[in-house]
Image (tube, rainbow over all chains, first blue to last red; front, side):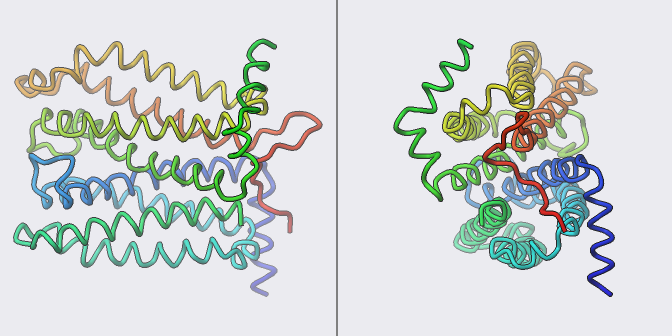
Length: 150
Length: 178
């Protein structure tokens, strides 16, 4: 039953040759937008970039725009997925990407947020948080791209 | 034909042949290109949002523009280098690809944008901060920047979808049929 339903959705998504590429453009633009804004906070935690602002100022200024970008990413992603669910589910790069994505989002809204918003965080905590965040999001991008090459 | 012959020569060089024929190098360069787009894109986005008055309103425009200037240049150089390697390894296929040429046109327009708005906006952010309201030229620069970079990005992705008549491209990624 589930299979029949997903097939119906997939057929609808595959009925026009433009649905997938255009959704993908939204997906890429939105992840560049949101990951790039998160990276600004990461770089600030590492002492780079917007040095005249504090990490908490950068985090606060970017937060609503990051959320907007993530919302578009998380709406467009499932549309891409539903175009061919079985291919994605059995694709090792896709599984890696989703795992990294879940961890990256949880990390972003827990430890990353706490460290960035607290101006009393230790230097070590800031550096580790910035590096872990960058590594997680770069993993998501690599995993996503390797879906097509796996 | 002249351009195609240059592209064919580029593609046949040792380094480009290596990239094309090695299994992991090509997708790794492409992933790096994409990760660079994200990091570089974030710097463009926050600069534009600040110029539009939609983010960092309590911080000087000069802080944002000056703080990111050299990082943007570094990101751009890495991004373009990766992009050139991707293009060069399959250059002959890019020649008939309309999305490739549209992307190059958008990149050229980014250059025109820089020529027009650097002297009046980006090179003198302190003057923008001295103004009681954000000058219209700064907002126009920001809006055009967002539009042009979106054009570069979307056409860049669409390059992979083009199939010349009667041929199959290398990087065509279409959802498998059910």
